[in-house]
Image 1 (spheres, rainbow, N blue to C red):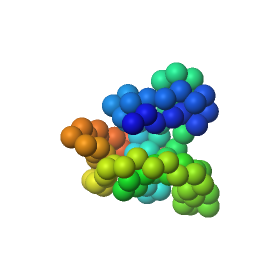
Image 2 (cartoon, rainbow, N blue to C red; image 1 turned 180 degrees about the vertical axis):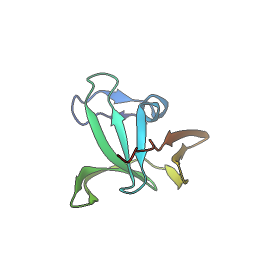
Image 3 (cartoon, rainbow, N blue to C red; image 1 turned 90 degrees about the horizontal axis):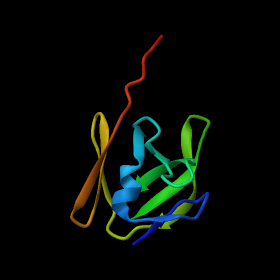
Length: 100
């Protein structure tokens, strides 16, 4: 399965795609992803069997587009999101925000 970048339409295998995830926002339950080809940054929600793309809006994340990824699973930890597909897994850490 190849997963596309919604900006440049480049396609990535799961390992390359999920390795480009940089930050998990537990409060909004979203992952930040940066395209290795064009540098576009997307926010997405990892759901069982699909990826949900959208935007933060009024303190929540609104999913507007969904992409089916059969077999995709997730587990929310305290400081990370664990993503698994088939026999592979990826860990997306939560960036600890400093209060000033």
